[in-house]
Length: 152
Image 1: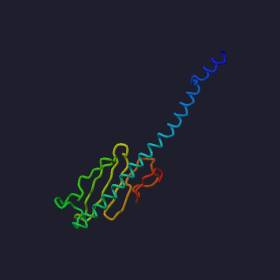
Image 2: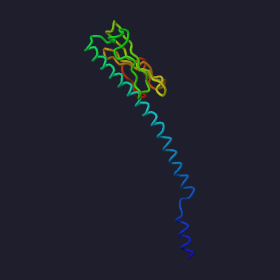
Image 3: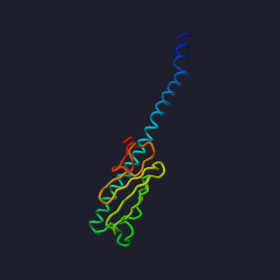
């Protein structure tokens, strides 16, 4: 009878020490995973914005092939793709025309979580990183390429 009672007592569950060790391991893993996730999410937003800029340049070139100008045909002071916004992006986009509608510069400026980032692309396909948050890159700005990774 005594053996049955002791066997029943051992099979009741985990001890407090075992639960605390499991909780400590979970906290350590979360401490490692969360900062890495934030970095990956930021890099994803930045990469998406640079992809949008490349797409905008292609769309402007298609418009130029059709109309022989980058300007809007109804308003020569605006870009052919006016008031562009990307709902999925953490960037605002703006276009500046030059040379009587024969050149343009698209610029993406970070807002919210991507504040401090700024990228541009022009009609010649020249890509530039105009600004990044401090500590993101040791390069001098502007850089003649899109910097999308920390330390690049």
